[in-house]
Length: 383
Image: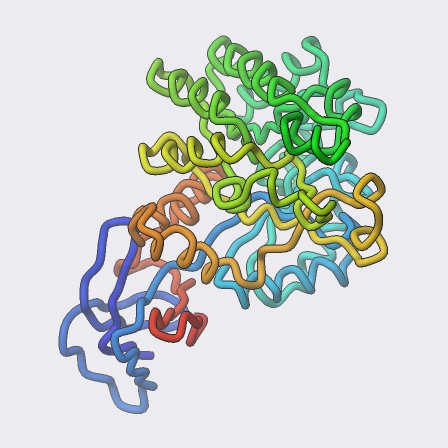
């Protein structure tokens, strides 16, 4: 296929060129390229040709791990311009044994949309260690850990991460504090009469895990950070040479706890939405480059689990099917970041966390692209 008149954009910038794709790989890039005999030609008419997104923090509907849900999420991701997803390990059942992993891999094999990878849950339901070594050898791309793990367990997990040279996906949370509240502890929670979760729940454990990363010289990607104080701690540690990085969701950068007013269960997220002031600080952190990875934090729930009282409602919301369009409107159109910067946060950096190189459109790379028309704000083609 020859794609003509495209505005090619990747992490290196933008250029108006033609792109030739053969057998799923880019074979030629240049101006005024001519189609070969019987080669399909697509006139992009100035639309953006971009690498498909990578999202490493995706949950299935109601966190139910089965082949049907995996197939559905793969198709949904592809429609949203996301070409590669990693399913969160804290599903039902959790990916913490060989049996569950093989069950999940069978479901992945039937997915025909976005590529689906799996992470392992380092903690079993009783907070003991899963068989990390075996699961890593059998194909998971990253270990996942909640900081409900006690220090001795966290240290053992760090030793495995050090041994296998993978990135630890870490959710910073305090078990005793998250169980006591429903949303961020602040003026809005007080107004609604809802028990709050203090931001210290996250910050305390970010500090703890930074020191573990420093000591063992391992890489940690902090998942779905919500506090600007946590972002600042991670940024300072990075300056000091510690192998830590920071992921923040589109929701936490564009919405605040005021969205919970009226007991809006769609705004009941995990982690909870920050205050308006903190949301603005997170946007500043994004512009400074202190945030490394963006996620849709896709956590879909059935109506029976969401359209109920706020206290009973499940955490999470949807964001995958319109992922790229939402990123473009809320970040690029608003002037927060450039298109190339957006691709660093949504393609290059998340891919790097699972050991892949993505984000460039050049000869030799696999053609996992999308064609995006900024006039209609629609994805025209997926490759």
